[in-house]
Length: 213
Length: 112
Image (cartoon, rainbow over all chains, first blue to last red; front, side, top):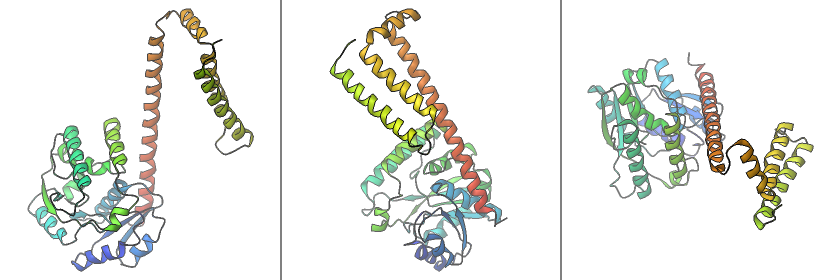
């Protein structure tokens, strides 16, 4: 997470209210009060000394989960767009024997901006073109992994390309995967965020994936 | 010598770029080096020279044996430039990844 001091306390509290106790937060070099806000919640907090991007932060979280011996890991975004109630159904799918569960947004819902649906379709198309696997939401940050997947997945990219790289790793390692519809809430806060994925970051992402994989 | 509006515009750009670089160099600003100053003078000076004396480029091309096929030379020039650009981007990308690894190790050190 990067500069999420306004919402991070309530986001973590809402996860804790659902009964989840082992929570890891990665502060990706925020220059606001994010780190102290996380500290107040009593969860494990890791800190990048400088901002390295969403993919880098998620990877640090996954590495921490490995060190702590976690058997199932669920990742979700820090801006409150994901509903912690959905964590349970993601975990249930993993317990059924899947290695990876991809949370997918229902783009037919009216409150989801149209440009996000279009951007996601393009992301899905390029993901399919690069790796030959069609997923319904290649850019969703709400995902679940079992230990086997965490051990096998190897990613290189630090920014939003990370989400697409996970799809590549599913193909490369022949992981058993499924998709689960999740609820998303796009608030004014989320729409006004400066560090969200933009059209140009998506173009850069495609160029980087073509040049460096 | 051929004086056209394009060559005059290029001359203004060249003088501005060389002047700006020289001021920054003589002010001893951070990240300024003799190499950058010489490179700026060479590149922009070269552009201005070619703009005013295009016939010299043709003569040079003939001496090299390309004759009128100057476009071939330019084409190979582009290939070299793109190759260098790609190498630089690759090095930059590698360094970015190394930096992230160092940051990650530092972030995880208290967990181990």
